[in-house]
Image (cartoon, each protein chain N blue to C red):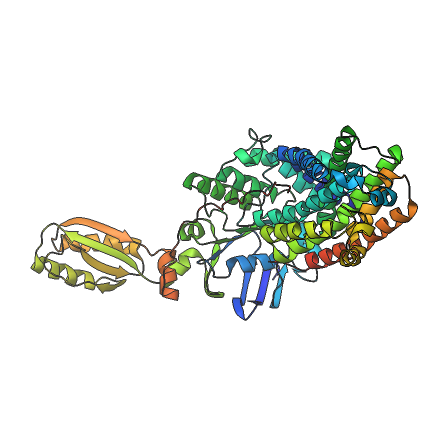
Amino acid sequence: MKMEMISEIVAIFRRWNTKLLRQPIFLFFSLIQPLVWFLLFTQAFSAIGDIPAFKTLTGTNSYITFFTAAVIIQTIASSALQAGIGLVNDLDSGFMDKMRVAPISKSAILFGKLFSDAISTIIQVVIILFIGLALGVNIASGLLGVLMILVIAATFGIAWSGISLFIALTTKSSQTTLSVGLLTTFPLLFLSASVMPLQLLPSWVQQVAKVNPFTYIAQAFQNLIIRGFVWDSIGYALIAVLIIGVISLGASILVFRKKIS
Amino acid sequence: MLDDIVVVDNLRKTYGKGILAVDDISFRVHKGEIFGFLGPNGAGKSTTIKILTTLLEKSSGKATIDGLDIDADQAQVRRIIGYCSQDVGVDDDLTARENLLLQCSFHHIPKDKAKIKVEELLQKVRLNEAADRRLKTFSGGMRKRLDLASSLVSDPKVLFLDEPTTGLDPQSRQDVWEYVKQLNKQGVTIFLTTQYMEEADHLADRLCIVDQGKIVAEGKPNELKANVGADKITLWFKTDDLEACEKAVKALSNLQGIEEVGKCVVGLTTTEGLIIMTKNGSAVVTQVVRALDSAGIELEQLKLTVPTLDEVFIKLTGKTLNVIERKEAVHRGRMGMRS
């Protein structure tokens, strides 16, 4: 039974990878979007690096270095949207029914997709880091730190995708899945420590940011990029991933297990 | 009974606020037959097929497939059935071969066996030349053929086809019919739904006519048609002679097997003709001709019409099947955007 499920996940994982590679638009967006973010924000906000408190709080006076974490998180969040949309497409096309009639586990259908999305997240984060390097970002934690960033990015991506899967499975609408995702990503990003150090945010935003998972993921990335391995922040990030993951994936699997029409 | 592979008893399905989609239906599908569910849109055909294929929860009732309960033995049921939905459940980003290999892996068929199986299926549905093309370039008929093939990878005992030819062009429809018959010859029991009476007539060994969630009639197509009665023989005479016509009516009324003979009016030969209703048109025709011959009446034209399933439907439900050709399911654009 266990072995069967692994082969099911592998089959579905490979299907999505093939689909991903055959969408040239994927690579285009993975490249263009971070570039736009890097250029627009870091140009407009470059003066932030000159604030004396910024340097003492973050350990760098380069806003672009600090902002790399925000670009990564934004990319993960928009990738996560695709998980739900991919599922809705399968529901619409009738392919989902084919899978559901086959003797395979429901979880395999979800995890095959999530693991494939994790691969695409990793590819995108690597691209972002390369763009960052080209723009003068230095990664203090070195190659091991990059691996750590990828681990956090991939697992956070999977956990965050769970939310989009849940919305997709309950609404069965790609429009809703897309709009909910888009509408929440920006507020969450700006109400977190992703674009500005926590202490520089207005106090009400700080309160929100403290319960916003993006804050902990961002701080882990920021530390790995600016200072090196700060295990506290890595720990917090992984706890955030775990909490979100258990809730979002658990809920998605529950909804998915029910027979749907 | 051992011969019944699908057994459905008192099946009901209610959606949301009391919308009754399937209203207490019971039927049996015999092993090895093609069993049809004929009815208009909204009759509950798809709902029934989705319940039987374990995709949808029933509200009440009982159904078994090859002795396996669709709820209690869901996992085993899935191993012995194949299903083609109304939407063509294939992946457009993959090639035909990749689609079939994927289905094989869903059914845990080992790689080497899968390769042989896929080759065989591609041959069978004549897609071997297009096997390595992505489906984006496929026609509706090709996609449906692949869909059929992909539901066969597991060698199902029962194949469920939900409106297999809706939206297909006539040639593709013929193709699908041919495959369905071939499969059935190889021993696969087939349960199909359709809104086309020609399809039910052409394919089904037995069928249920369904309307508004209920089975309104069940039987062999010929039996159903025979029950609504009557074959119709229409006669047109050489001359428009009222007297001769009356003579003919008299001669015909005495024949055995004739149920009703029409009235003679002026102009009959140029209008609808003289209509005779009978139970058994083909047998009666020769007698009619002989009787007219001995009465010395010359025939201009004779037409024999047998009832269609559409007429059966009208008689049973008071409305026509009223099939409006559906456009092929529009493909929703892929949301490839990453914003």
